[in-house]
Length: 243
Length: 217
Image (cartoon, rainbow over all chains, first blue to last red; front, side, top):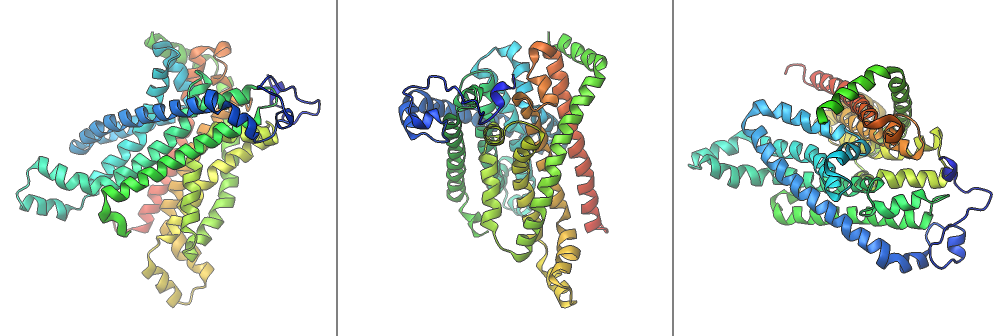
């Protein structure tokens, strides 16, 4: 078991067939551009697309579910503590165990990965949405009432827009961490960028180029998503730009 | 089926308390060593940068990058460069622990009430004294919050180290064949308990720090 974990073995690592062997691959170099170019189409790009899909679905459903839960926790304070504790608890379940627990129920499918990912987003989303809504100053609510706003109008026109910066900050954190955590799913099912990453880690002496290439893609994807949502934040909440 | 799994899980815990405790100790040792080293590195840097009101971009950039870095990749790189073993996994975990600690200690000190800092300066305190006696106590809740985030983060990843032969509770989780699903769930509950207990302990400290800050409230 631990044999393949010995890095830089002196006995000359045997590199399996990764396509045309060249010097870089024989030496198990950190980044063999030839390999990346050759396998962009059949390994890296599909994995990247799958990863984006995984993330979008998890963040989308996670946000929707959290929004409903947060509304309950916000309107009825009694539910806030148990809901918050439940999302805390889900977040502390280690991902490898979570996937294994779901497998008997949903099988070795993408659904299994999605359920775990969605559960993890609840932790960030729920807290941020409730905190954002609670953070609306009492004077503002008072003046909204004074202007004759109904409860629903107050929510959509005052509370939600004012909570937006905090909510979007949550979207940022949740998206970036989902992209990172989604790689673990490939421990069970070759899907997303975790696929090539675990493939590389499973090779004797670790296939460095594949690890670095797929890992870098995951990091770049997360950073790109972060920048994109930051931009969205500025467009949607121009009033918070002063800070 | 689920109900019987839970029964089996608690039976597993009852039958193997020694094993679970031993593995939990391994995980805790790895996680807390990394957390300690991370604190020793990140705290002084974060506090000093925050005190100087410099390096916001660095502090925030580091934390974003760390969040974007998948733990699997980090552990994999650590193993590819250094190999497995307690010391090497600790290094990888330190890399993970530093960013939230750095960012939070920076923000904690940076955001300290400027009037209070000015008052301290007016009283003739040196810069180090201002940091130690004014900014640090004011920012303590945020620093503790950072330690809490880092602790949960590091415990979760220390578990993941098990699938790379790093031992600890992750070892059980990566071996369903040997320990069964009940064993996996039992180990997961131990990890959750470890994380929640650590978070709770730091949460208590955080609340105490807040109360000390505002004794009248």
